[in-house]
Image (cartoon, rainbow over all chains, first blue to last red; front, side):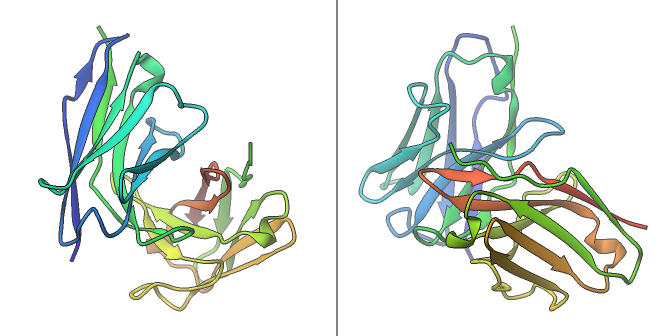
Length: 118
Length: 105
């Protein structure tokens, strides 16, 4: 049974970089497609980007230029970096798995709240 | 960019049928997934690839997709079905609908 766990700072200052890690157990990050998705309080879901082996990425065009998703296969985790954050980036951040292209997100982390504030 | 349009809210009487729509340009040519999200929880896929029910999802949930509209149908709605529902497709990137809050009266 696959499990995903997000980790990282819950508070980030404006203009700084948000960094989160998703640790995966029960599956290899080399075997599936791994996404970051966020949800501001009381609002809908926004896909940030995805990683699929080996080292391929796709990003939401609205965030391109600020976002980087990378992998560490030795630790079986993948990471999100979002630069130049503002209050608009305050959200619950989820990592999620899809088994392939056009497949649904069948496993999700519990989510982690990141607040952008000075 | 591709957009998906959902009604913000849908109400259904207990035991009746709820239909939640997801509109998008020629969405019938895409594969649509539906997620249920309850407060404080991560989303859960309830319909994949237009009409496939994942293991563990009640048969009351079904989906269809044609033309410019995909539909999630919940038969015999129960109190436990009260949640936010999101549709999702892959275009040049993954796109979610704005979500629909289902209220079971």
